[in-house]
Length: 365
Image 1 (cartoon, helix red, strand yellow):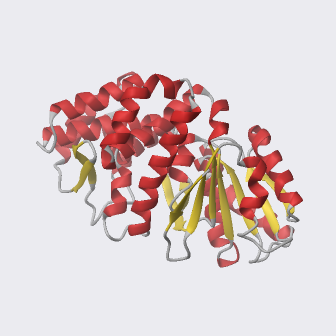
Image 2 (cartoon, rainbow, N blue to C red):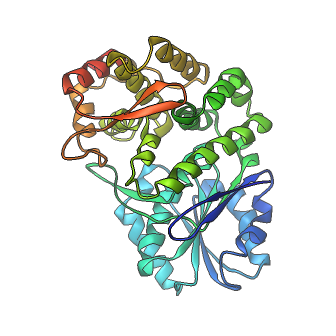
């Protein structure tokens, strides 16, 4: 087992990465909550093979275990589900000494984490990440959120978990599409911070798609380490560094919103967004065309989305969603653009005419 530490103003927390950690969950969580505390496992019915052995392990440590199931998909990140979970906690007498254990991917941790942030003005929660996307990205850093009809993640809070558990053995059972989509965020880490990670993906793309646990564990550890460092230095996105984690996301969220969060999953949209970001960087002279092609070759080798041509999306619809991006400043969009593999910069005041051109080049109508 590998353990990383994430610095936070609300108290540093650990990330445990390894195989077979679900069955040891009770021992890992024991130091976070008081003995005999109430714990609400928040998950989804399809993840029973994950949360049931974890619940048994927690129960053996003396915790009082309750369960709350969320619907599948982005619909779980809604005001309706926020209040349903909050009332479930209240009905079972949860106090500030008690907590939430989120078992699932980013949707589960976002909803559970935001509920933890606002219930009784804040209780502790643990993220048990069961997807590659959650293990490398969404479970770490304390960003929690729900969606509004107008856009994704428009209500939320910075509320770091008390612990993150990433059992890489569960990745073997991930559907192929879900694994591939998660790799979009891994490619992101290579582009923004690590030439070595990018090269590792290039060399081992077939092994990754075969779900080779040795390679996957290394990818999770490197990616989680990058994110832990970034969020530890810029927890509340006030110093500018944390913004680099949004590489590909401004375009990607525009695509997701224009699709009304259907047809593509998040990582697929991010992959398409990274292609547009690289094209924009090349058009501005910030990076070489070779970087654009190298990124595209990797994205294609991982069977990710490199073009939105077949989605029949209007360029104007994508731009409309992008202009609601919560990260814009004074009405101006900020773009994270690559300079070279392992280095990006924050760019603003980019003409919308050029942004529109890049979207059309990617397949927007």
